Image 1 (cartoon, rainbow, N blue to C red):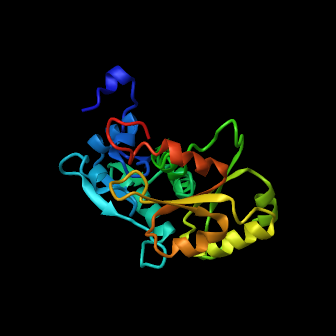
Image 2 (spheres, one colour; image 1 turned 30 degrees about the vertical axis):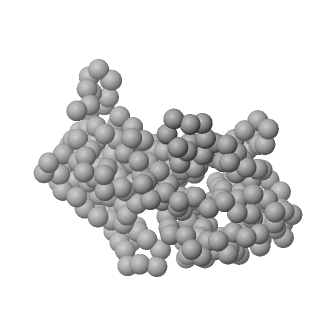
Length: 264
């Protein structure tokens, strides 16, 4: 049990909603606030990407309410999910909205917070470790390094209709940050890579795809920008893609799969 008084943690009041990031998968990456919420919530509205080991930490008797959204599959729509959070809170419940990664990094947490604010429902946003940071660390790929980059760009691989984002200036992105991190991009990697190459990036630039990051099923495929579309065909979602020279550090920093007791 979390010692709330010792840590100075806030009360999880009835009739309120906590929008909590569960991280990319490994339960060890949960924050103290996330654990506190799991221990106290009456209702937990959770996404498809929340690891089952994390849900197992819920207090006995908590109602688990699945609200997962996966591309190409039937799923709850966003207005219905937001309305459900409002309704549960108005019943006097402590409502935990549990999301994979960080709720406000391509997680629609902002939309849900705005709906709660409009309805007058008290809420708290609890950040989580996003896959573009935690997943790369577990793959042995530092997001930044003084020898390679001092800027990073995070991108969604699809827009609200499921297609490649058409409002982005792909040439500017290609010329911008030395490191690009793409979420939810597996289906469109070939087209995205082509746009980046057309914008001036080298097809030989190192790239990597991290599938099911920080879980026991994690898989890392190292490739090049020009080959991303081909290698993506055999990879299962969820996955995060990184493009840039930092990928080369994985050869020395793959701590997760290095033999125990030996340097990576």
